[in-house]
Length: 199
Image (tube, rainbow, N blue to C red; front, side):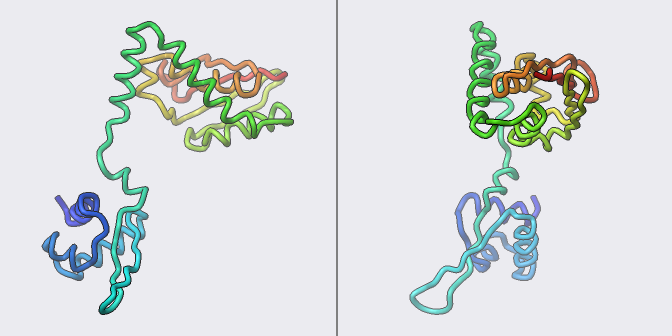
């Protein structure tokens, strides 16, 4: 394991630590510790705060940032797949996903009032962090088409079609516009395609 990872793991286990504490625990030189701390701060993985002591000079303590959580293994996908598998086995997956769509749509609705179709759709997609999907939207005579080149739920969607239908269901429930998914990456396409009918 490299020294950078050792520093992150030490901070995860023991919390805020000084440079001297890290030197002692990691077993590398002061210059090496300072080099890694500087790079970790630049990468947004750690933060520092000045701790004022009753005696002596204030000391700087380093701690993990919120972004550092992404460095440590997580098993969200496995848990999600297991929950969806159990729901499917119990025969209520469609109802659960419909309720998920309702919940998302209800959270979005307050920011969608008094907007025309196109502005409504653009605002909705913005709130859904559409940029993460590497999306492109085009307008046709009776509809809008969305192509999303990065499926945010691809692995799970390939196992559960209801997950692939989440976006069109949210669009429909949040805007009242009819939405469908004619094809997606689940079908081997390069992009997920969504058609939203104009009013």
